Length: 121
Image (cartoon, rainbow, N blue to C red):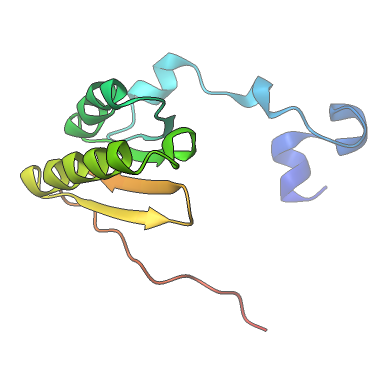
């Protein structure tokens, strides 16, 4: 039995149509609290949502922010981006774009490497 099968079980019996339902492997709140840092994905709908996201990063966590719902609203997006850059500067963190509609904001002591990892050909 391979390592993947040991972790997730047999694919034929563990899911629907050959897929494994990872929901049952979701960590409980007790398990996530033991970590020093968490990585979370957020989606911003309007400028007012930024407070929740900044609090999360101020708490020492990494945030991957999806801004696709407001990607067409240039003024709001520029305002949010400037506020998040200021946040990163204040906490000695880092901020970088990922693709077209994602950005990552990290707390202090976490540097974002902007080079892509590529597999060997």
